[in-house]
Length: 158
Image (tube, rainbow, N blue to C red; front, side):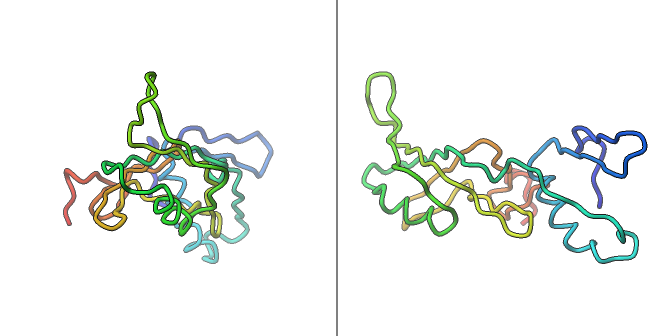
């Protein structure tokens, strides 16, 4: 499937078993595995092979959304997030040690998955004219220009 040794964290196999456990160094590699598996699972070389997801990527996440415009309402951000995910609970303003709002919100979100692949939130977007940045644990690192996991925007060929 095109993975390198440096992409794989452990590959665990017990002697005599037909089961293998594989973990990837980066979440993007897991997403690429599931996309690739959907393409090859019916090919002759993959006959008799079955993959099962035991990932924790679709757990509930604490997502931080950073805005640079204090007048962008939490309701607008919530509406944007709900197009992509199941938002749970009440959002909270991120306050510093003096109680001053940083312009960021924290949302509790359950990531959706389709066919074993977790549907991640874009790391940046526009709501109207307002750019937002989105951060959470396990979020894939992608190029901001074309969305590729193989490079970052500074070296984007697009």
